[in-house]
Length: 169
Image: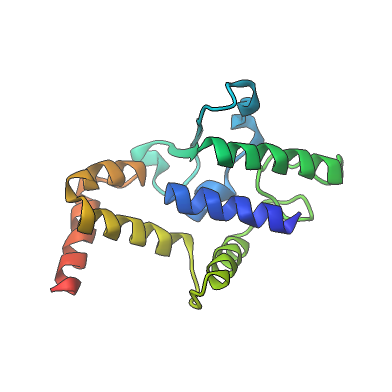
């Protein structure tokens, strides 16, 4: 269970550049049977509870078809383990059926990166900074689009990119 859950966490956070709290607050109530749509389509979920939701609205959690299939199988596996234990309202949960903690998300990210030779602690925020830096360096015209996806204002994005420019000079 942990291995499949942690793999799903890594895919969701790394592919969405999401805050860990977006994944932590992903609730079953927003799951609208993604497996009912065409098997080739991607799905989006809006997560209304995160750090800047009040100011910038819900965060989009996007799933490609491959991640959607992983997600569906995770839900089936979770349900098969114990119908009573996993009646939690949170999609990503602990083996006790409670909401996952940010430390567990950090562990999943760090562990996955260790397996590919990156032996430093990794958090969702580190991945967000890496995504923003990559956009700034390779396609600066898209930085406002990325800022919106990350639920940042354009001012926050510009401040972050100014720091990157200053550090790289």
